[in-house]
Length: 380
Image (cartoon, rainbow, N blue to C red; front, side, top):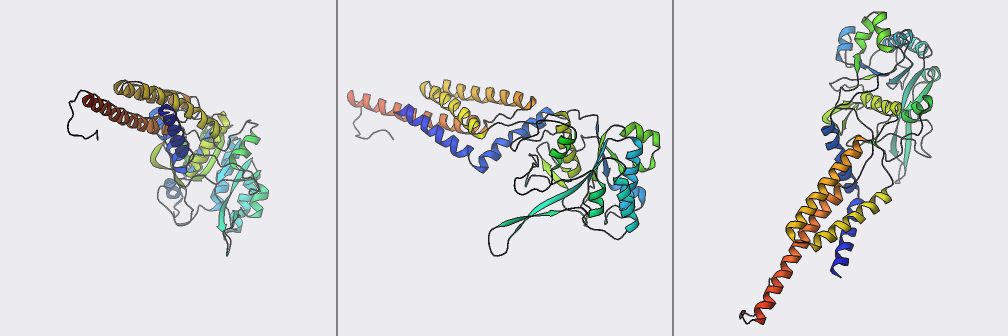
């Protein structure tokens, strides 16, 4: 009866925690530790970021209070086309025609000179008078959309910490997301699934970057050596928040320092390029597997002396940690934070207290039998 009660208690506690939003966030936070323990790793050689940073504005004597002129973006694309870049992914949103028709015409022409993706993004808006929400898409102006090879959704998924790929949403998306569009273009299959996690290569700055200002001033030979055959992302990497741009820096599991949106997108592209991200299995199977292991260990803990039980609990936590980290290095997410670092230690404490109370009760019974207890009180 006691063993059955213990098993049911462990199952109930772990299932309740694992099925909660907070519980899943705790499980996912193990990757924060693993990323920082692993450190930075090499990124694909075929990938590079052209960053629109403070140096770019300084080189061109422009104010950071306004977006980079579209004529300058056209200049960058022309350099990439002449240098033999294989694809340009522009992490900028050309949502309005602006006030420079000549710059627009130049950008339209440049977009058609080489394979290019340009971005759209979506947000949800509450309906009036009810709780329904509708999805609003902000797309580039028509002349840019028609000139580019593809318009792709470039939302970043993550309210607090960016962990997941932005994948197609059934019934909501009219366009492909960046991850699916790049996967189709490069013929990479399979693609990430909904629960799979982005495999970051290191803290901000790990993905190779070159300032757009430097690209515009260096010679053709240097640009060709740098860009030939590569996928190049162009995007804002300003360290100071500007008044013209939406939020474009995000918290990631790899560092407390915020990462630019263009580097997050570059990481996503690199994962698909290498067919290497952190894969996660079915939540139901995860819950069942971990719960059964917990019950087995909990029964052992209940059956042995407290000191040995503590060693079993500590050993189980260490073994899980080693297996989870090894799985992480192989690109597999292995849950168990809640089970082996929360539920199991609590189970040990509860069973130890129960054993202590049972032992006191037995001592009291022996004293009564031997006539050694005359206060009439039982164990507390």
